[in-house]
Image 1 (spheres, helix red, strand yellow):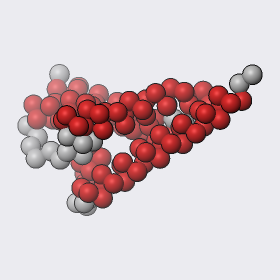
Image 2 (cartoon, rainbow, N blue to C red):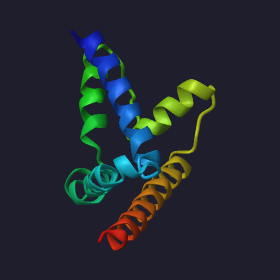
Image 3 (spheres, helix red, strand yellow):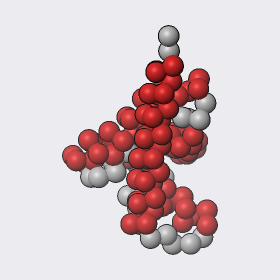
Image 4 (cartoon, rainbow, N blue to C red):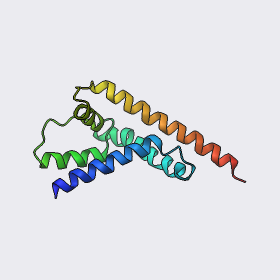
Amino acid sequence: MYQFLDVFFLVFHFSLIAFNLTGWVWLKTRKLHFYVISATIFSWVGLGAIYGWGYCPCTDWHWQVKRALGETDLPASYIKYYLDIITGFYWNAALVDFIVAASGAGALLISAWLNYQDWKKQP
């Protein structure tokens, strides 16, 4: 079961990240994107104030699965973990966190602006 959950969280989390970064592009997904990216930022900041800045429940749940599978020394950052694995390079955690936060904030701002422009065009 844990093997299945590991793959599930990998696919789900990467899909969520991809949608957070690009969902604003298409008119049909723009409104949904605004809600999803807002929930993501709320998690990072709102829940982050309680559980640690940048908190993501998907990462938390996936790390629980990985620990059950015997993995140890998991970093706080999901992106850093996979960047390290995929590139074979040890990425600086602060740099990765900065890039992730800037990308998330940028996606939120773009989404808000485009949704506002779409709303203004409505009859």
